[in-house]
Length: 324
Image (cartoon, rainbow, N blue to C red):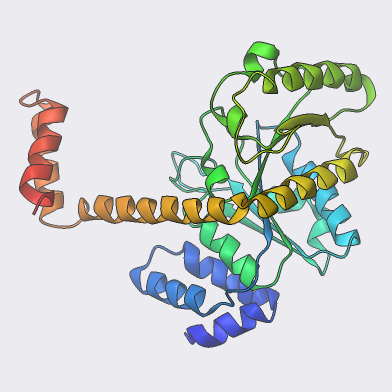
């Protein structure tokens, strides 16, 4: 593979080349990994998209929201990329990858690109190489990159480590003030959007929005937020209501962080986080290589037989095989 040519075609916004590049970075083969790094290194460095992470519980309407929101951005003249992470089966390892079927209109837009990817064994609501897929989309000249996580719980916050803005979608009647002040994903959110605020659910959405707005005022103030943020607001993806107001608030928040110097600082901290994750992954990979694998299997047998505790076995493995 000519990685330089692939990088040039991605930079020229060729959709097929971008899809091939994402497939390359998601591959676990060592030779593909080396090629992926070459492609990433050859991409333009002066392109920067607004990265928006979006999370929420299953059934809250993430895909419907992304299609309506993405269509609005396209009408504003922006190029939009969507990276949709689909949960992988713990038994078979497979994924349905069906998020694109819910975005029928957006998937046919020339200025939009949608890529579903399996989460595989990676925790946190995203795939292991999602951050590199974001870099490819930036290199292709997209203005906004939307990262849709799998349906997640309160502890799944990894997407915040690759996004400039983190949106949390909630359903009407999804909790009260106490639910809103729980730590975890709630305190990572820059904006909480109460979706499905239409029809019979609108009164419940109004109450839920008020509950979370009150809860957000109880959370500790973050230095990267101007007055009034984070905030809760109601939207209806089905009727495309509240989307323009939400986009205006996102732009206000992103602009303030740029002017205050937090935007680049956050990206630098995120780069350090992913460097450390790569180091951890490399160390774990050593456990799967001989002779460490054989020693690990032998110790695992002793643990199963009750001859040694799991903690002692782990200490012995590290001290004899990984501390050199």
